[in-house]
Image 1 (cartoon, rainbow, N blue to C red):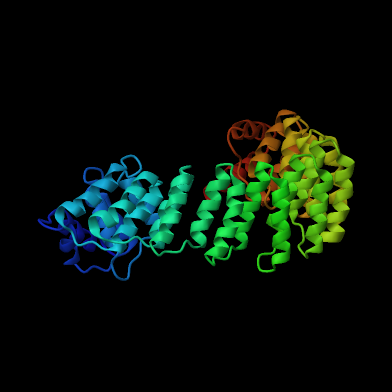
Image 2 (spheres, rainbow, N blue to C red):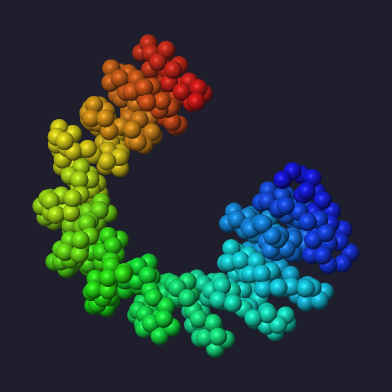
Length: 451
């Protein structure tokens, strides 16, 4: 949409003598987001009310729907978060002018409240609908307000609105209950979220895996493990909403935080019995928890279990252990395990490689760091290592006069188009030039310019 249509809309918007909406409708435009944003810019910053009315009108035009980006842009340009009163002013202006409004327009107003996280204004709009405009709110409108109340910590109002829906002949749906579940769990009341499952059955609303997993996670976070295991058991027997790897890992993580290793491993066995295989997150959860508690030997033994029984790659398992060993300051042991991986068939992952290299640099073991990086390069595992590590390593080698290794590293960087990062750039460049590698420096410093 060119500037012409936006200019035409701006003219009708700013020069309308009567209803803004009637004036705009005379244009019969084919809208797009670029055109809408251009018109909003014309209302920024002095005429936000006019901007909101245009935005609401545009949102109900045939063949056009606002995108998530456009809602966000409208809130920023019109300052809705900073000045929430504008929402009330718009609705009151509709009332004062006797403007012909409909439910779709109020859905747009509520969506702006949702984007700006305005719970109080959204509730006010919901009440104003029937009081002043004789429009009955639908499930979608209630859901927007209920979710905002839950996010605002006002779970009591959200509950009242849910009950009100039933009285008005509306049925809470999965979106309604998901908002309530998240609200209860965030408020530290997951047992209330759990009790909603009975209410859902009464309303013939079937929970899905996402909702059940959210309840389970809330129960685990609050330490209600007995109730969590009861729900997990129901999910395993339910069929339609069988727990997945994320569900099981959440329960395992909870037991690990409490030092209940036997229970955590029992869940791992239940996971396998249900035909669900662990992933690298499950591996790290258990391995890291054991290492933090000083039970490193058990962590080593657990790797075999993950590889044999769950099909997790040996490389992923060992990478998790390397990261955990670094976290508990067992860098030598981490390095030894890492080198064993490189000498065998296992491929270390990017995070383990980057963390170990960074740790060696921080300990001023730059020569060891270089030889490790060279070994990773020979294994073909360098593709995604943090580019900043190359610069740290290069300047460290230069400062300690390991110029042969520094030159080799610079050539690796050149081969992979890795540029020198500040604040390490100048120091490394000066030393390389002094050692007669001016051409290499020119190539390195030209990488970014040539891209």
